[in-house]
Amino acid sequence: MLRVTTAGESHGPALIAILEGVPAGLALEEGDILPDLERRQTGSGIAKPYTGASPRMKMESDHARILGGVLAGKTTGAPIALLIENADHAKWRGRAVEAMTVPRPGHADWAAALKYDYDDFRIGLERASARETAARVAACAVCRKLLEQLQVTVGSYVARIGRTTVGALEDVSLAERLDRAESSALRCPDPSAEKDMQAEIEQAMQAGETLGGVIELAALGVPPGLGSHVQWNQKLSARLGAALFGIQAIKAVEIGDGESLAALPGTQAQDAIRLHDERIQRPTNHAGGIEAGISNGEPIRVRISMKPIATTIAKQPSVDFRAAGEEAETAYERSDFCAVPRAAIVGEAMMCFVLADAILETCGGDTMRDLLERFAGLRRGKISDLHISSEPKIFWPASE
Ligand SMILES: Cc1cc2nc3c(=O)[nH]c(=O)nc-3n(C[C@H](O)[C@H](O)[C@H](O)COP(=O)(O)O)c2cc1C
Image (tube, rainbow, N blue to C red):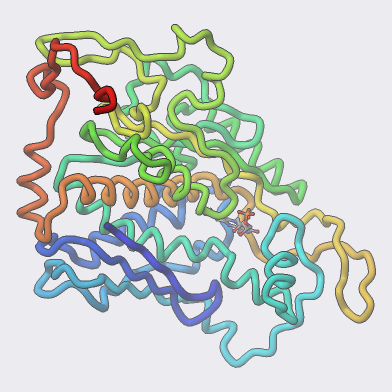
């Protein structure tokens, strides 16, 4: 239902995003897109030392201009075109850039040059760079705006950076964790762990190293019935997985309790189905709000793991491709030391996209008015929402 395409290079004049499939009548202005762009630049909108963000983030002050699809402050149903200028571009325009002949392990340099027969490793990195995510975050801020009209909220927090993990958070509700992340420079809901994370980032920076981590993404207010079990690529879990694996440096995606479920006996890994006031209740949420690829009305919970940034001040072994090629060490170029808090915002953006897409698929509608009406009519978790018969039936008639 929804489609997002981006274009543009890291140091080129601008990034562009086109978002198709948004119903007509959604109130939208450039100010709606700004908060997520700011959050992507710092991780939480709060700039503090030791977040590990590249110095470029201080220079770029992203602003998305709406170039199409919105008239008189409302979406028209036409593709929405967004443009973000790269402030850094001025430094690159008209300048002869030294050839990049030594590829960095873990980046696009080598594989992209081989695939497209580039004669300079920089050509691959210009597009592989996560600068591209600014365009995606801008487009998906429109999806967030749509979700807000339906009282669906998407948030995130950082659960791990390097070796430091958050402490026990069982007593802190999911909503409170997401809230706390908004006032933490590292998006960490545990102040004591945040201090240790900051110390670990500082140490890594001094050692010329970089760090990865783990992000928890969550969506609240999601109705049951999104996605489908009937085909592998219609499963909400598969769609979230594909979208989140599409983020640079994301190397694992877990739905609900994910990997840890593998170690549990069957009875402990499921979420009991209970009844309270004629409503279905789930006392736990190991499944992360998705069963058989369909949302079950509980909060959607997804964990994503980010590898450490490939560009390091500390040298890494590689090969210099000048002339016949010889073993060489990588050269450093300005880069993030730890981009986990910033990647969390990109994760939120992709989650907003997948959920808005799945809602439009279930509810349809050319206009926001249609969508709101149909969304309000969705079956929820009441006993009366189901029509289960107690009569036996012949599913497959005997041959005539
Ligand atoms: C928000 C964000 C910021 C990133 N910043 C950098 C960076 O400054 N330097 C870098 O080498 N990689 C950075 N990356 C990761 C690279 O883009 C990524 O590792 C590279 O494109 C290769 O892709 P892969 O790791 O998915 O294999 C960042 C990723 C994200 C999500």
